[in-house]
Length: 309
Image 1 (cartoon, rainbow, N blue to C red):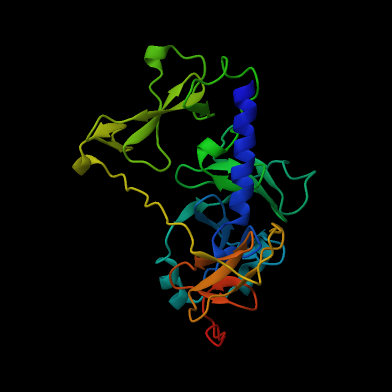
Image 2: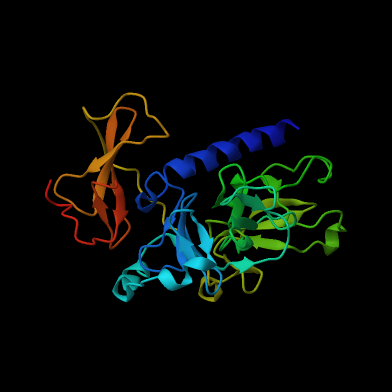
């Protein structure tokens, strides 16, 4: 019980922090329109920025922040900017959403996000036409506390007390992708590690447990086992460096998470400064984007004079 409560607290803190410190293209918003495709929208979450695609014949409404079939005839796509989009780093793209005919959204407001009752990597987004089912890409799961997709070890997957036979062992966490009450020798479910190629997750009675590959071997999702490096399709995630921070008179000693302070980085358009506990820290914009001092977000340089500061 203690382990579950501690893990829940960690999950909440990580999900909360991710919504605040996400990539600059979102600014203060968790969701914003895609910069070049009316059919897509951007969600800032843990470590990555996720690109979601609306169902066919619907476009993202930047006022209601939901996919809207009534917006279909009002889109203008900048094909030149789309080239820059594909050059972005640390972005994941989800499969197109699907409009479903269930009453999930009847008692919920427009724009509400609701977890799927059976699959932790899916969620419903309430639109004017009804719930749209989206799937988190890669190995991410839906984090109901902050309404974003996040790494599985930081998400409560919906397993309630009594579903798992006792607490998860050390280096394991509850994961609804793992079957329950199986014979140990028949439970062969394995999952990729969210960030390491030399490790993977093995399911043990409803829990996902970290496992290391043998020395010199790398995980292959295609083969479902650790193999030689040349046979593994896994791509290592590079750990980003810490931002460069200096004491700055514009930054108060205590941060307001609901009103972060951002201002231009001197002499550069592709970066900005963000206040953190009295210091101004440099934040890089995603490749191809520039910081707009008026909106305080990284965006396609539509003509704003960001360098005139």
